[in-house]
Length: 327
Ligand code: ADP
Ligand code: MG
Image 1 (cartoon, rainbow, N blue to C red):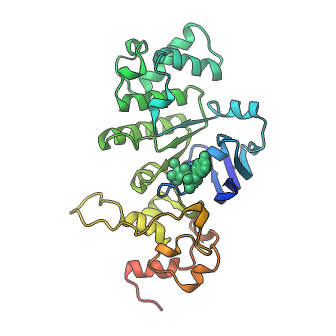
Image 2 (spheres, rainbow, N blue to C red):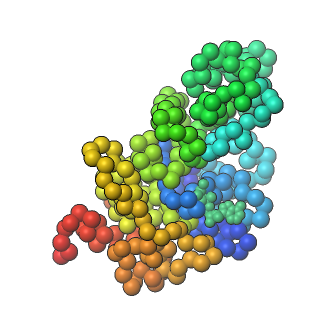
């Protein structure tokens, strides 16, 4: 089956400073993939670049195909059609994405009129159905309300309804629940996963929280300093991470059950894009780095079982983690 989206060699530079270094990522119809990494690792830039949403001064190169059609170099009109239509995005701060002076009905109907062949009463009926679908109680009445009359979690539900208005094949959700408290966060993610499965929609879930993506995605790509450093089925990555950075991210997670243990955060911070180390960007923070790691950035190498890792010390690191003696 040909992929729904295929990103190849996607690179981005701002003011001559590269921040994304040849990202490859593909997504099948209906598949949910997670993109995870600390803040500043290039998760948002990857999808903003892919959908033509970066500011003009960004230098973007590579290829992004939607159903085999190149969209990176597509004219603005084509991209307008793609965004909100076949591909929808939701962001971390939902409040800023809604217009405070228009009712929810008006905003939902506008989104529907733009991307669907509906008018008049059919628009209002569909707006109500969407609000129902995302679990807003008393949807018929609540359509006349303004954004400030809803809680943070409800506003995020409305944003999901807006994103679904165009019947998208792909939803890119960038830290959709980061601003919400933990209980609401879990409810919104459950809702997204349920709707996604019912609609057969593909999803990219961007999060700095590996637990969130592992639970809601089929596959996970781990990003560090503008590169994908590991890609694997979600359960495989969670149970047996190969890249020392992925191992660190999992070490920094609170346990799902059992006694609370001390969390081991990864020491240090993501390097500034203008001061990137010569070799592997993670080497300065890595506990198993060798001299070789300072020589060149390792490429993402296939590992079998639909996995890939960009680390020359992955095997050694994994052995150390599992307590297996070196041969
Ligand atoms: P993430 O989403 O993983 O937290 P981003 O993709 O937003 O990270 O950022 C990746 C890098 O690109 C960061 O170093 C960030 O400072 C830089 N960056 C993002 N947007 C811009 C911009 N508009 N201008 C300059 N640098 C940017
Ligand atoms: Mg981001």
